[in-house]
Image (cartoon, rainbow, N blue to C red):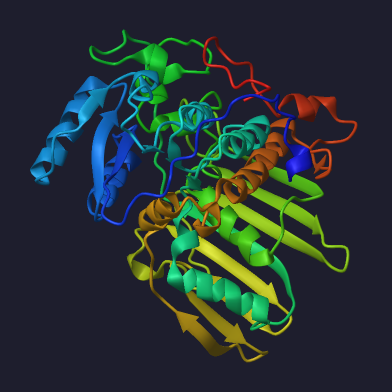
Length: 428
């Protein structure tokens, strides 16, 4: 991977913090705390010798609510920030957890690394392929511990299931499927309006183009706009994409083809609510294939993924081998032979946040279950699928040059135009 990063100029890097003593408190700041960030607060606050020392959100009403929430847990009221850059000036903060919008993930992670902070960053860690290289380059240059928020990597059952695949429980694994079938209603249409009081909209926009405020471009529904999100394949789907790639034991594809559309609803959504993407991997000794499916609204269950209590959602993975298949939907189940007899199975979770804290304390990124390089590779697959969909044709991808050879139209979509001063630079 190193040869794929941009060459970085020589210079001073952030001094590596010595491992924390056994009972020394790790001070962490949670950034973007309305939705997923609320889970970050609860999870980190529950860990021993960890203090949620600061919160940051561009919506002051959300920020105030979360500050009160921490106090209701019986914890000390954290420091409060609306500007992430100001938070990074606090040298007492050891690490930050980022649960902001996709388009801010990479830049905020780079800033944190430059400030000498370790980072837990939500999925997907990047908004485009250029950022996938830059976020890893920053983690390496500043020697930071950076965990990707694909928490399935810390599941004890899934880790066992992946090991079973490696051992050949279903034989030669030739294909994986990722399923992201979620009950998504229409977002309707939202008019332009003044920015609500207490919302720091310019900070929220960050690298994205300046556009008038609408409710649909703000809380959560930003996922469905190309300026900020990556559709459901980059929202829920990145989890299943990461598992599919992990189980196949592959990195980058050589061919990608995606098609789909925005069906049934007439609303503001830009990203597809239905998509089928296929990826071909050249393993030299043997080729492998990954098929990823996004579907909204009503759907059938497949391999009983999600069971009857899933609320209409079918979220999981299937692996196909020469001697059977494996189902992953929280735990794993196997079905072997032509008769599909039940084989090994397991359930049981893990603590992704505790894994991050352990790695920070030990100053050892190899401890991480979802080290940022793994997360960045999986996000590249998401971006390639979206580019193929938007261009309406297949792509040939060269993992060595990290480009689509001879396809300048596709290559231009590997990065965005950044709005000053929120720029992901060539040299981080």
